Amino acid sequence: MTDEEKKQSIDDKLSKVKYIPDEETHLKPDEMQCSLCISKACTYICPAHVYEWDEENQKLIIGHENCLECGACRVACEKKCIIWNYPKGNKGVTFKLG
Ligand code: SF4
Ligand code: SF4
Image (cartoon, rainbow, N blue to C red; front, side):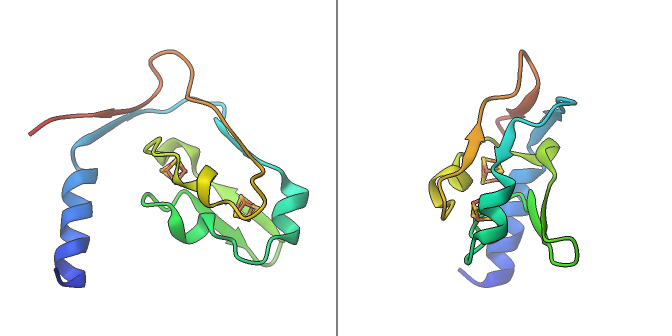
């Protein structure tokens, strides 16, 4: 599969999800650990690009409202420091078939 085909496939899948964002983040990494983290694995493992490293402020920016709830960041986190809970109630992501 070419890179373009892979990108279309991900875009296709993302067009089939619906979000009801929770105002409070369900993704809570330990900021101190993030500042010491070498790999910043979360910033490239996440399929929804939820994490971005702000070099100037030495801080992780988290767009929790785009989270697909796949759990990959929790597994990949170098410091195993992400407190991860499902969004409350009916908030978060819903996957549509077809
Ligand atoms: S991989 Fe973990 S420790 Fe590193 S920046 Fe991401 S959340 Fe922080
Ligand atoms: S659970 Fe998945 S989609 Fe959500 S932030 Fe982590 S890697 Fe990204």
